[in-house]
Image (cartoon, rainbow, N blue to C red; front, side, top):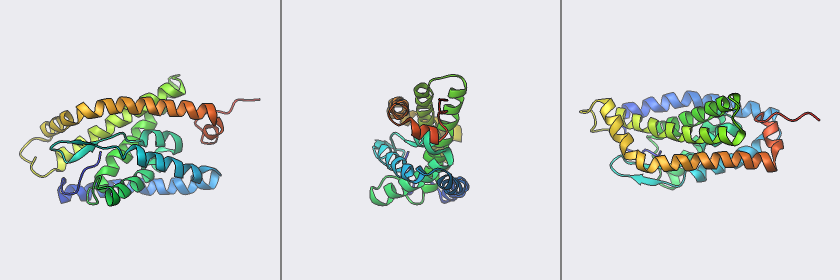
Length: 225
């Protein structure tokens, strides 16, 4: 979800910047380490980064809130390259979209990174790993992760707006959260279902045509000869 400039108070804009920066720093460290260990990691980063950029560049405006609904792409990225690396990719994507496409803002970049990057990546990754441990197939686990990650992003954005949007200080945070969630729901629920289907289909497709990528990334175990 892209929160536009001016829709968060300065205090909360700074808070989200500071919080997100911790996760981004860990992501930069992971990028360096994985690039040293995995030969094809840098080219893969470019492909995944482009996918996140284009998937999240399909906004449906949400009235009143000053934001938009859209697929996220970060659950898929987190599964492929790791959750903290996915956060770094979300920073690049959100910054370019804010500068050149007027989607989101600069002052709200920290909040947008927290929702789409941090929460979307971590929830998607954890759900995928739990699904695999429970015996779900690659496609099913990835599909549930894509859906859950998308819903988590929209819930986080609703919370950010409830806490920090000017003009809602006269409402309790809980009431404001429910109000913003209700505005998102009609557009975000079908998008979350779609993202789940696409995420699951993408993992199954990669496993079919390029299983070596998933072997190298540790997503699938290489069968013994």
